[in-house]
Image 1 (cartoon, rainbow over the protein chains, first blue to last red):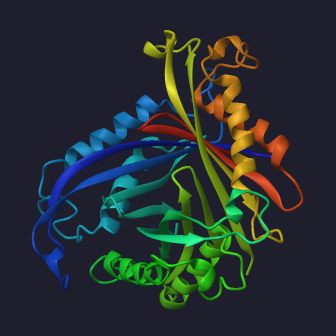
Image 2: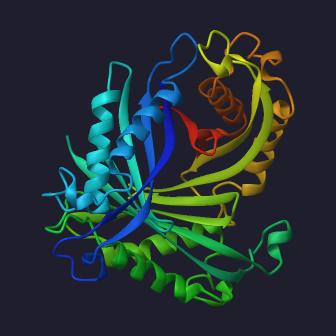
Length: 126
Length: 126
Length: 126
């Protein structure tokens, strides 16, 4: 029996984007209130009884969200080259978080990006 | 490292149903505002950078939800025979979507059906 | 192809707690409206077409939540000894539910505890 703790924090950002080569309205510049759900798996608790402090996960997630907030994504690396679809933004956000979070007993598990209240993509790596 | 994109869209329908042989109030005809969460896994992105267009998943989910919406489920196939529990409706909805969605790089992953704001069932197949 | 039904019910409780040895504001007595999401996996449906009656899962979850509701967690077993972090409360809640739910065709799968609307922990066992 292996206990596992998945810590999830929510944050958000508001940005404009344009989908290149998209056959429809999304090819026009528009924007969203993106909602972010970041999930970190911890397999061990520290002496206080925490997998990772929510405060620390939030701080990391908010710093990354802050780089996108109130910006035109197509002007920011890597979205000058990579199309800023929800899929690609989620993958980028995941990797930026993983670089700061992964360690012996914890790792970035999933990054879910809500584009509207009715559509999201959840990015994971095996 | 295998990247995986789980695309989720939400829709809903309002229907009446009766649970046959249920020892309680659910054996009386009643109804719900059912909420549907449909999840599709894509293992590859297309040239635009999408696993599957949210618009297409929504269209499929809404068409299926539309067959149930403002109907008495017990009068519709297969619920004339199969009891229209949340479990059975979710399994049916999953299979109807899978038939339209599954392909080389994507497949229907889960169908969650909320019967109230405090109870849902998530149907998956391995 | 193995079908799987994950039944989820939501409940909540409002309690005070103090995190011992925490270097920050959480070391002061405070409280939360905790939200609970309890997930039960059923691999088979009964004759009525249910994995487990939502009513029964809710009853179990509410009884356990009721033991914590409007209490100071640090005065309740096991939190007189175990620090009442979200991680430890979720693990305890999971085990209390598992003891009443696990059987041949169903088992407790996950217990998610929301401490705020933007932070939760999901406890699972493999």
